[in-house]
Image (cartoon, rainbow, N blue to C red; front, side):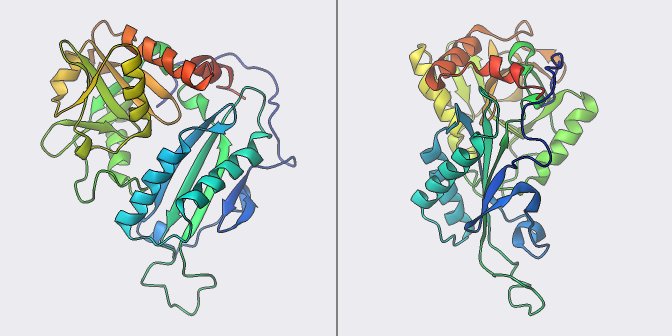
Length: 325
């Protein structure tokens, strides 16, 4: 998601500069500066894109929904057959440790993005190669860096534009598997940006129903139904989507899950996306057609307000403040 506008410069950045303290990662049991992280070209994560991944963010330095992210990671490891030595409680502890260690490096009011990924280690083809130096076991990394507000701070007020991609969602693995094998998303976004440089791709399933975008789950406010999202067995079980379902109840809206045709987004009263970093934001246009009046809707605004109450952070104001560090 590209920013639609940038704020004026805030003056010299107060975050650590080269030579100062550096953000660090948990890498196979040790702490390393981000600049020193390296993965072998023979690792399955590189050779085959076989990487199970989770992405979290902090609010006030505290990682959000850790248990839910770790549970999804454990399920992805099970599906992919990657035998990580860490337990769910181990992963939870690693996430909190990385957040605590790195949060002191950002300005007051800022927050972190936290990534956690696991690969099978050396690809089977090279697992016993004598010329390789290192363990043939899974590679585990948990890292943190400042949230990339510069990529999306304007979307709360101006909204997101989407372009329907011709490439469909993959059906070769379970939708609940969250992994880094995302070439189809990359190609879809390249196609979308060739038509609208500020757009993201809307990906359909192989039956032509709405699925998700390359970065987020999608919901539509449909008259007489409330909020509608694609069938759960067809989409990634989004942690943020479950938060929206919880918050929707607070404002008297329900979330239902069913197959949804693309035209239903254009005729919907509102459309919105939800994902880890930006939380929730409106979609105002699909394939060049306005959704409703082309402005962020009232239900989106209510859900964003409820999310802000939940985490104790003014999400939109924070994104604007730290769009340029």
